[in-house]
Amino acid sequence: MSTEPHAALLLPEIILCLGKHLDRKDFLACLVVCRLWHGHLIRLLWHDLVLPQKYHVMTSTTGHKASQFPPTDAFKERGDLVRSLVCNSLKHHLHYLVPNCNQLTTLEIDDLTEQTALPLLRLNKASLGSVHLKRDRLDTKVRTPSAQLELLTALKDCANLDRLWLSNVQVDGWGSSEEDQEKRKLIGARREPLLSLPSSVCSNQFYEIADRLTQLGIVKEVIRTPPNPQDVFYRLWKLTLIESSLTYKDQIQLISQCQYLTHLRLQLTRRKRSYYSEDNFLPYTYNTIEHSLLEAENEGIHLARLEVCPITHLDISRSTLLDAEIAELLVHFPRLIAFTAQGTHLGPKSIMVLCTGARSNELQELDVTDTAGESAWIQDLLSSCSGLRVFRATSILARDVALGSKPKSSAFWSNTVFSHSSSTTPNCSFWTCLGLEELYLSIIQVPTIEVDVDESLLIGMSRRMLMLVYDQLARLTQLRVLSLGGDSTSTWFRTETLELSLASGLGKLETLRELRELNFRFMDHRLTMAEVEWMMAHWPRLRKVTGTIGAEVEIVEDEGEVVSESRRTQRVDRHELYLQRQYPLVEFSTR
Image 1 (cartoon, helix red, strand yellow):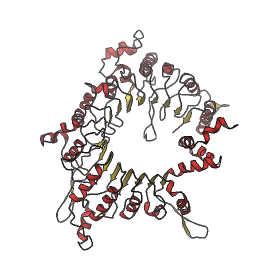
Image 2 (tube, helix red, strand yellow):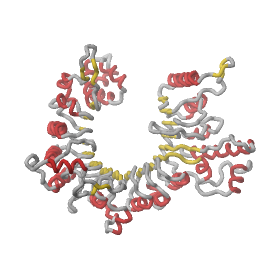
Image 3 (cartoon, helix red, strand yellow):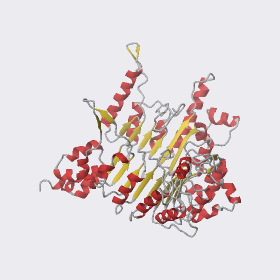
Image 4 (cartoon, one colour):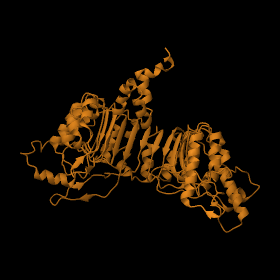
């Protein structure tokens, strides 16, 4: 029993649990440790399969073309191990996926056609639990009613299906696009027996499938027929409606019929109507809002019907609703604990709804990234919503962080900032969300001394302003993630930001002992090796640092010669390599 301390590593359950947390390099190394590990870990290697969009056709040395397809023999032997399949070009892979991959639980197809989807759906009807189907809007292949009925029948036969996402997959008759209407004229009843199939047949079958689901996503041109008013979808708890072809009235009806709906993703886009067709000038209702929220009340479409749904998570990102419409919508969701409004017209009316009443204490997650809001509104949210745990916004002015959002007179600025006798913490609007765990916010327009006025006065102003900003951050003692910079989708560099140097007041943040992740990417900072080593000493739980570490300012010249930018970058890389060796538990990254 010499191997008794390591006997646990021979248990299949522990091997599989550990394998899920290994990166690719360590995973491949574990495969060759022993035959037992190989036999169990190989299952995880095949568990999630992602096939690329296109396999490039390469020319060999002999001049003949050879396509880079996966070996079919491997699928014959291991195909039954695949549980999740994501494919963007299924027609090139179908010949070896069927009948080998017959135990799928998750299927995602991004180029849906009748010839590719139906075989896999029918083959895995006993195991499929999640299906994601997408059809290219520009695809010239028209989905006829008979093909829609076949697809719905195949989905209905999936006994364990509980998550369905359809994007541009028309399921209740002919589509409203110009090509579909033109194709409908060309196809005769002899070639299409179900040409005159009533849309209610397909729509009823679609809502029968929806009655079994827990999650449903409808994106763009999917269905135009609302459910029967008597239907109630008891199992559905998550609903996504993105630019749906359903009218606004029908979307409200569908939402109100989901009695236990808690997560709602709603993207309403207002666009002008366009007309086509030389004969009938059919209205192109795709991507439109039939009525605005305020007009809907006049039409008798009462938003109060939404209050019966216990919706706690609302996402209206990229919607073109006006500020008054967003505020009206928020009033009818009193149980919100998470609200996402990226890229919307969030304004003072919506901010007032979020900052007043019981909602300000119950809201836990708020995302207002890329909105057209003012910096003062961001300060109002942080000062009013005391229950926040996660907050995301693009930027806030340092002046608002330090002194609050209310307009200040010149006398106030003189007494508070410029006066050497004023308190370090004047009567500013402190953030009340002291339980905040994740903060994604860039603090910009931090005052500098690069102005042609009294330098000593400006140095004092800058020092006091920085101290006030650091004081606000230091109060958030529960912070786990602090992102003052950008992410992989950022398109602009943050100038006039916090220096993040010990000389500017970084030492005040020693209270953030729960911090696990720090991001200062795309920031005009002065953070060097000294600051990073200070972080390692005062933030013991820190595990990820994202951003470029600045080189030492004093070593800019070598023997009187100015150091080139490439050599300066090499010095930074050496610093990061040193830190990675010195602190192996911390991940240092510039991306």
